[in-house]
Amino acid sequence: MKIKLALAAAALSLAACNPSEPAKAPATETPTATAAVTATDAWCRPSPNGAKAGGCYVTLTAATDDRLTGGSTPRAGSLQVHEMKTENGMMKMAELTGGLPLPAGQAVALAPGGNHLMLIGLTAPLVAGETVPLTFQFASAPTITVQAQVRQPTVEGMDHGAH
Ligand SMILES: [Cu+2]
Image (cartoon, rainbow, N blue to C red; front, top):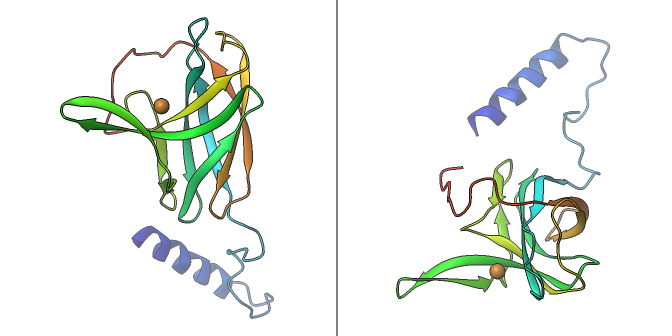
């Protein structure tokens, strides 16, 4: 909030310094363009031979409050958004049927041990070194497709909860 106010104030003072600029609505906002979601660090775990499902991870940053509602990939029958939850001391995963909230400007990491993407019904094993196209759908932002690298996790089983 404070940062936004400071930016707005800066924009106003810039406009005030430019007398030739005709008075109009703040130009820094582009109301006609739909706010996009940025995806970084997309990767998938190699799937053991014969496994019908695989886990993928990505960091998503939405420009305005949004939700990851689902996705698809040519490499699997379906792509689900899963969460990890503890039930009776056991870690279980479940589909986030209501979607994953993406608060404005906040990098939301899907990472091992937490929320993740699940490729269900793999057409072929995910092999380290290849790339997998993942398409994400959002409640309001346009659909995006990223190329996820298949690789081993850098730190197996560690959960950097504060990231
Ligand atoms: Cu899962």
